[in-house]
Length: 217
Image (tube, rainbow, N blue to C red; front, side, top):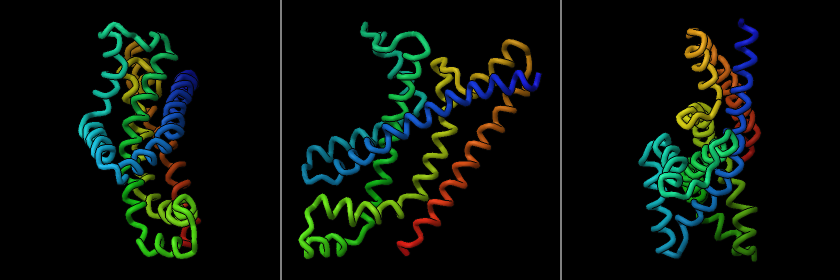
């Protein structure tokens, strides 16, 4: 029975990992774009993005997930199919929007934390704005944002369990299904072991990255 449950949970872990990696792929660049928008000289654009970020950060991810998945259908425009692919797509969209807003705040703090003298030095050397950003600011920003970014990414691992609200068969949903079908509660607790291993690997990875970035000290 243990092996059967383990195989089932590994299948759920694959879905959890898919949500995790796809969210990072889309949310990280989108978060950087939003961060640049919030510090833009175009006040209207900056204000608009600030409002969006405030709304997303101020409401639960579960609520956002339900709105994105259910509201289009209630309005007569069901853009998500009812199969596993449609539910997964809606999940990734909701998670991407949510985490991009959180990442944008971290990115903005990292960019603004780089001393103004660094930008001025680049201008004196005749560097363009894009060269200053990618060759001077971005590298120093990465070092500053690794600790807060690692916390958000680890939180993302645990937040993937919210996808069960729209019947995405991820890790927690898999463990819960054994309680409903076979009356077994231990698989639900057993699923926690997989989360601990996942988070443990990420913690070791981020500790390694922080050590590698020590040359900025």
